[in-house]
Length: 156
Image (cartoon, rainbow, N blue to C red; front, top):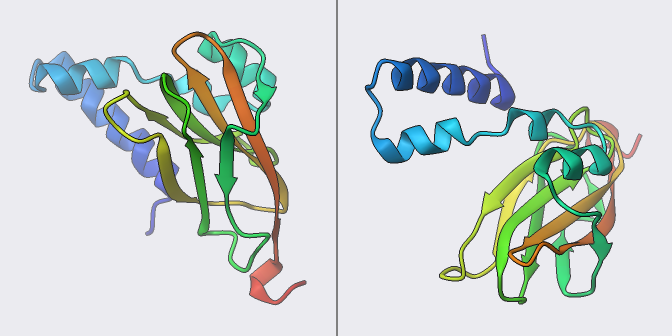
């Protein structure tokens, strides 16, 4: 039986919690497991997500870019990327508006790395996608793009 990525993450988090409670995880892994925000990944809208993360209302910005295909032939593996050249980025998020859970990924960054990430996400249908930059000064900036998903890769 093949597990979905979310099921694997959920099981991995459960195992990490058990190991942490038994004192079998290193301190750095314990901190990451304890800091995991399950509510953020359960949010259905951007407003709910920002409230859960304790962030301000997002503002559209030309300083944030999102990359992805105009048309995705296979909704199971849609390549998306987020980037900004602004200093002081705390988190970069990739959101898919019409997914059951709007947040697909959150990357924690420091000024020691370039604020540019990419991954592949699953999209069940055509949707607006968002790249969100959460800044150290409290600002939340975003860019959006529409990605159309074809059914079975045949345009149906």
